Length: 516
Image (cartoon, rainbow, N blue to C red):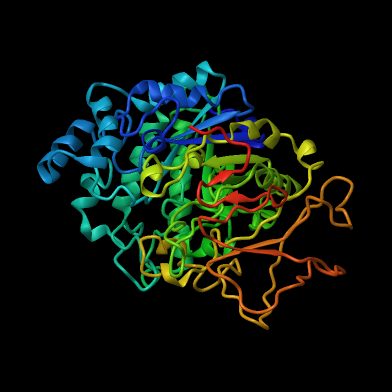
């Protein structure tokens, strides 16, 4: 019997750290060398490096969500490996270096989730698991699609004029697709985890809009969440309520398209809402509205390893695809705004990727840096955050429309923004053009300074130089404006420290991170 009183209390988490196992073998770290295959000690080390720095809960992402990284009854690893070898043959190159080690560990009897739980308990962190619901990035890799996806093309989305980018993935109108994921949820619930997150952001496309109404989509998704809640309660070993979380978009305009009704999901048993800008750290979100909708539910803002990932026409090849990393100050300001708007805490996503993928030094000439683990004690301290100088930024993020991505595999991120952009960026500035850049800001304790200081500044970064005279930019209701530094993205771009800038070539916060 589940303790009903726990349904009325919020989870005791201020900081939740997420580990996607793929980051272990796709980055250089103190415990992983370039092209080294997975060893179980690497999983231990990635938990140990987050111990004692203010992280309350650690969330494991055990794969893309189709090939399990636990002892599965629905799809045993032996069955998967036999099927994969017959269909694709032995993995080679990056497939072998990055993914095969995980499969070999399981074929040898290993269990990622069991080991993860044990290590979390050892280091005083609450173990959570995350199940991705429609992630396609694994493709035909060792841990990619798996047999269910490959052998059931009748369940795929197809392209309806809206789902480009994931049209080959699964259509949740089919009960067989939902049952496949529910079986995985039940297997994960069999472990001694304290909670399970359903990741609706990998990837946020589940239905063909020409086949379903919004009410039908919401009925399907709310029912799925309710069944997951029942699974967690039924499999609880101690009668303690285990937390059910959802990772959902940071802009409410997307929810009806995905079938998400937040208030209905909470009624169905959701305890934690992770407001996610997908792969970005982003300050401008609908978190304030979500807080008002869900006054008694734990709401978190997700931060990640990048602000933006430049790509597309007109961009210097030196900088194409190199992530722009958040500075410490930008992390602190993002967290301060979240707390000021009612967030209960902060979640991370892809934080280990802050160091860059392991091929960056060779393919992009980028120096690798360790992630800024030193920020976590500060991120959990709203009072300290409120006393700091504020560093606001606006970028494309999740919700900006980039036309040059329409035909790419990342088009899923653009699909809603094409109809209702949530960011004015990216944009093309021309002489005489006026574009409003609106910020939701929370002033620091004591109020914002009226007069610029040595740390004040406004910077524009773009694909090329700006034509025309851009001397004054209004920065507030009664402001006279300040002169910005306009900085094209290039290898030579090295903004000054006073502007809290980034080295575009290295992707490193200046003067803070330890080189690898």
